[in-house]
Image (cartoon, rainbow, N blue to C red; front, side, top):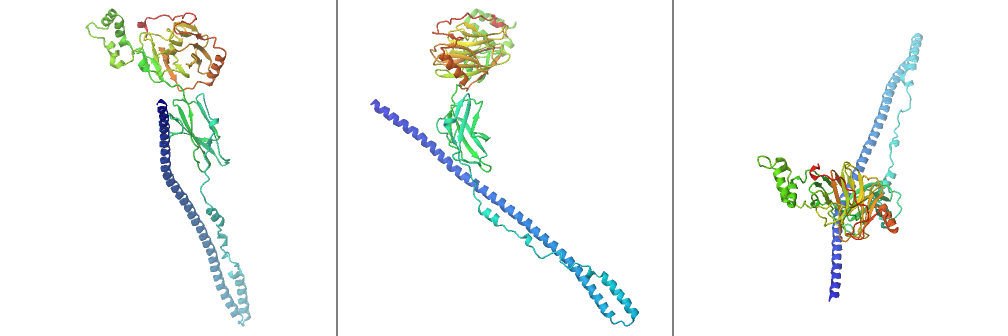
Length: 528
């Protein structure tokens, strides 16, 4: 019976997966069908626009060449008309002179004949007919303005659609995800010397497998990539996966997208848990800052639970002579409704926890303090941390503590014991946790120098833990374990562990290290 149920359950799971696959495929088909209509309309519009442009160019060239022919016609006509007018005038003058010469032949008086002959000779010398060029200044030939568009016709007849580049193929085996960088590699199915550049698109997603047509995130575009490989740097992995696709472009057109691929980009993501913080801490998702005014209104209530007499004295002190509460005290007090759950920590435990537990695996995050931060701690803790407990002073908390007040100290703390760290305090601290191996290591986030390592056996899930006083911290998550840290941890594990570590065999047993050198104690009422 149980085996039949198991078999039926497997069939149900297979059918459910197939149904999801079919739904996704139907979405792809519907999306593609719709895009076919849209893209078809667009390319027809583009084709008409291109032909209209060709028509306009041809019409413009026709008008220009026709104008050239007309100008040549006018020029030749003008030249020939001038010659015709001059020749007609010269002919009339020549005919008149000829008639005068013929009449002179009939003159019988020698003196008159000699005079007439001299006049004729002078007129002939100056006659226009003898000064004209007897060659037309223009010919009737217009062949120099003839055209032959046979090559252009052949070119137009050879018009065809653009040669679009083929879709590239992403080489999944050459893609690399490491150190919050993603390298995507691809190749062309055939050699194409016309390709000018590539376009790479990516988006974050929570879905494994083939990318979905509809997703929460839009595609991000990287254009003008000249090689067949590209590395995206400085990414924050706040999603489990990323989709990638690429297309090739020549000078004229962009080709189809490659088949998209999905790469895993898992990393540890968490925020400060505002419901777990001390009232004097102002908490945001990625930042926490000490607020000296945050818990003053709660002082009397907290002390009242501890000591009724003390509470009575505090209430008297907060009353003016008229018996009414001090306006200043009233203005900063917080009602229980406003506080909500933000009374997890109290006293001088200016602590806030992360909102995500670690139950297995390797994780890494970074913390950067404000430049003027007086005191802060970074580490891990069990969820059952008491509300008066301070990081490093219990057997369920591990941290490194930086104190810049009165005197500078840098120490690893656990179970109220400390080990001074003889290294410079970094600007930013990297925290590495290997839950399964029971390791907690702190690094200089810039150069990945190891600062300190704790070794223990976790008996329950842990959460990132922080303490800050007179300053603030900024949190960076969504980080993979850096390759430098992985390499170092492999070396350390191979050599049997770090000599600078504080080892713990049992949470209830204190570490064998020097006693913690306590900072100068200060009355909480005197703190700013």
